[in-house]
Length: 73
Image (cartoon, rainbow, N blue to C red; front, side):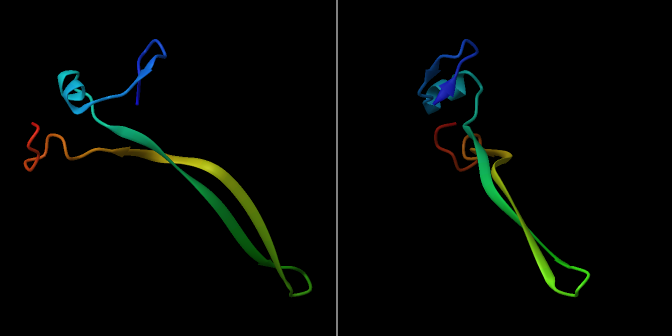
């Protein structure tokens, strides 16, 4: 799916992408859990946990179009 500047969404096919000089891409999100272990004053381990849902880490892009092995270019 692609989103136009006016907010309309449509399916993006390879031919349309080539004609408009577009590439396929998708956002990449991960759920992260951070664990921190510390020693308290008594010498015992204290564990803290922080959940961070849906952290954006970048885009996954299509690298096939435009490559030397692509038959559609």
